[in-house]
Amino acid sequence: MAGHVAFPVFHYGGCAYTAELMSFSLLLPRLWRICGGLLAATGTVMGALTAHLPDSAFAAGGRVMAHSGMEMQMWQGIALVALGLTTKPQAGRILLAGGCGLVLGTLLFCAGVYYTAFTGHHAAHVAPTGGSLLILSWLLLSISWMCRA
Image 1: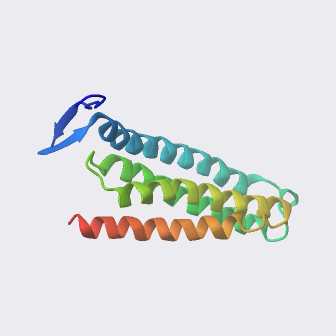
Image 2 (image 1 turned 180 degrees about the horizontal axis):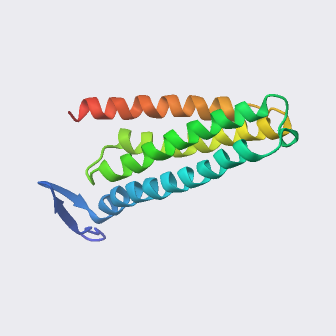
């Protein structure tokens, strides 16, 4: 067929994948591990800041709020590392969307919480949007795991 480009096909676990799909499926779990490690590292820094900064560095009630954001950040970071370690190259789109949502949701939620904790001002709908995205992402991951059982 003229003008037809055939992509190389790779076989993994009894399934065939094109080079494009295989590289994408291998790249995301690696990025999740990297993002999870970075979230855990910066979460550790935030834990130290919430423990050692003077009260004047926080808005009213900000220390408790920042600590809550740090806990959420640490749990999501650990979850991303675990997801990145256990995701197989034949992962479905729902699982891939759920993992990407965890990254974006964590960034939005924690940024909104930290901003409010230190300034006392609310960053519009940043934290609620991030929190909603986290909930949706966990639901997507659960659906993906149910379908692949």
